[in-house]
Image (cartoon, rainbow, N blue to C red):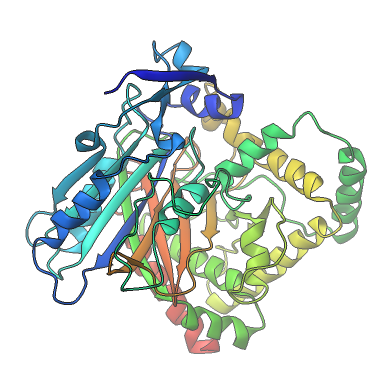
Length: 465
């Protein structure tokens, strides 16, 4: 490690993620990327990728930061910057055990994501993984949420890629990207934890909240069918342990868009219907399905983006809505109809609010997440919602890193007491890449959710495909 360069004050919205962290609650976000090596490359390509990752002098300030010492006190309020980076520590060469299936890769990812980052070093790690039976290379990266939110972290990964398969001078995410003056900091409200952070940022600026509240209450009284915070307690809404299980799979966007178009709903509605069917079947297997319908917290940006069936909205609205997942309904088409209606009603409430009002209203809905560390809160209260489902806009075209084709971009998020699983998906070219992270103890056989996602989509396709 090099000598300390300087100290800088840590904003409270950074500090809160360090203060909230414990062995049971790691506060880092990550991603698992899959790459197809360039045609004609040999076994030395992994070593070449490692060399490209490690031979970086121009490390960005974000990846030099670490908590000040002593890490348990001063380290929660001040950042220090390291002059040099121990790349052998931060960038690790790993291999999956035989037979080298995706199953073994996900087992490794689960283990790595459950381990805390060392606060005596800059708070990030990257693993370059070989040994997959299909010849692909995997890269698992994680970075602490006090440094960037999940969306910003994924954007950093994307910024290192190129649409040109012949470009061989790509630099890794921790290097200052040529021609880029600023690093991504916040994710524009796509990430739920980022929403909570942003909500705290504007907590003091409450102008217009009272009129907004009056409008919301009026609409709720008039319509009477808005999904509000408050959901049935399930096995997914209890305290969590420190170990994690990660599951990931890709679906063709065209399949989901076809159902959305035929049913007159949105891409996001169909995604939520897949999640609803998956959770229903999973909880039926566990003999734990509640009689009342479960709900999901969905970042508004996902809903707005889905309006054009997969195309990004030109707006920059931030916030969150709570959607009825209709898990009490046996028929998949009925669930889709109720989800679409619930989503429309929730978005109608936000339609007349300013961005600041949307953000403040959403932060209020998410306040229970900030209260989960309070002893007894999770045990004795019902959750505001049962699951978080968020979407991160990814690259629209094929992407490459020094000739290697990106073949998977799976977000790995955070679970909390009261929210034992988190479902995050990222668009990539013609695919939606789903990443599901969960508490290993309270969510057994989490990988079954992937099977049920496919079953739910196939059921919708029989009616609307």
